[in-house]
Amino acid sequence: MNLENQIADLKSLLSEKKFDETLKKAETLLETNAENPELLKLIGMAWLGKGNNTNGKYFLYKSIRLNRTDVESLGLIATMLLKQEKYLDAEETLEKILAIHPDDFFALRSFGDIKFKAGYQSLALNYYQKACQSQQFSQVSFAHQADVLTKAIASYLNGEHYNKAIEFIDAYPVEGFDENLFLAKRNVYIAKGEEYMPQVLECTRSLHENVPGKVVYIIDLIKFLREANPVEEIKALIGKGLNLNIPEAAKLILLKEAGGFYIESEDWADAINTYEELFELENDIFYLQQLAFARTQTKDFKNALMDVSKAMKLSEEDNLSLLSQRAGLYSKVKLFDKAIADYTKVISLSPEANNADAYYSLGLIYHKIEDTQNSVKMLLKADMDGHLKANEYLLKKFPKQLIKIRAKNTDKFKAKFEGEKARNLKSPILSKAFEAVWSSDIKKNIKSFEEQIPFLKVDFLKNYLDQLSAEVLIITPEALLYNNGDKDPLEAFYSVEMESEHAIILNIQPIKGGQPSQMKLVVNEDNLILHYPLTDLEIPPKYFLSKDKANEHQLQFFKNKPLDIPYHESVEKKVQVFTN
Image 1 (cartoon, one colour):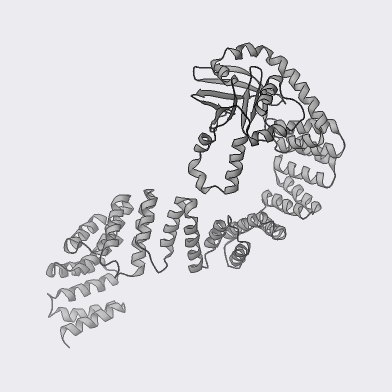
Image 2 (tube, helix red, strand yellow):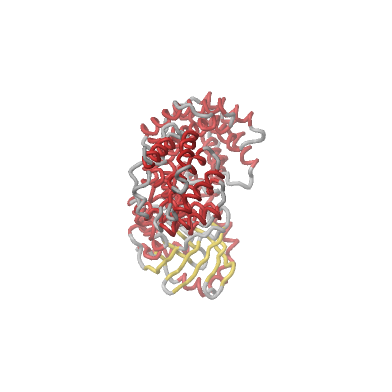
């Protein structure tokens, strides 16, 4: 048998990982072919296969000395050095490969790996890009392609170059599936935000379909589907996940996601079953609260109360949320004294907090037991704390009492602010404001969010424009009226806190009562610019223009006054002129 055939046999033995047999036959051949680089390379490969790096390296270098362009031997040495984390030696060997073949995929990818591990992301990315552009890229295995693509995308991500990452992904589409590659792509799409949610979903579906045994992809898919909420699909995914043999920690996560989904979908039976199972796995009072909430929707108030009571026993201290929930349940079963006691305790435990819900609920309970005085008192407090329904309820059920209270407050605050008129008349900015009735400058007001307009729903945009059209600001030396589109506009007395050449800050006291606030006014050319309320949060200003006549939306506002009582006389005069 000639040498060529014998070397072919050695290669066959190597492919079968018969390293000892390879070495035995090769040693015989070596006696008469000591200068054959191919034979020396095969011996080196066999030694490496046996884990003897010293002998392997020795024979590979002998092969390279006889064949300086032996890229395969250089690659084997580089691989060995990389495994040993001898990166400087590996780089030296890789440079020799690139000197022979500048387009070598393995060398470019390996250089990228070295730079990536060292934290040099831009250098790593440069090598990965060259590896992808290599002519060998289409010839290497899909696993190697996916590996270098994944690392390139990771480099873009680490540098927060999301747009370039997407361009790179689009430039190298793949037909196969690789878990790490799809995870990297998904991370880019997640980083880009809502616009790329379809791509996030597509990647997650692929991950779930190709790795069906991983519950994490089922959980992710449920999360990403929640906004669109395809009920049957999500239910099927929950069932599929629970049928897997998964650790308890993963089961908890899946059940939590399922519980939230069932609550949102108003699937009370499945919500109850899910939170019962969650509580068996983990004694968390939140699960009992959710159980009670779901049972309440099915009018199972008895068991809901039992759940809340159990949760309160588990809680080490007074829990405002549980107290409020129990109070609501007491109210539903007409145990009004107990409900009043719980809501009162909620308020006493958090006197500085916003207790609008508690006050509103107390107002409704007192109304049910025909205690009008306390009902009005509680509803007024709820309204002062900003409860959206309190004022509406007062107007509907207690208009006479509300008119009396409003008149009383008007007299009280009028006396307090009577001395401010003279100061107000001296203000240059207020004097400008007194000259007109001010309507919304719609063009300028929508400019603050014009970039979002293409993404807003048509109904929302129409309602917002109608609200802007209805806005009106009237300021007199004695009082002001500001309708910002709400059913309950601001009618207030005011005083000057401070004034500069360009701006004035007013102390605002609502005539109906409640906490005072502050308002800032700026005059700029034709605009009166309103900042209200002044808070630590930056609220976009409102722009107003002088108008002589009310538009249709403003006429409707003045026509449909919540209470059939006139505004402050100075404001009322301006309203009459503006609407006639």
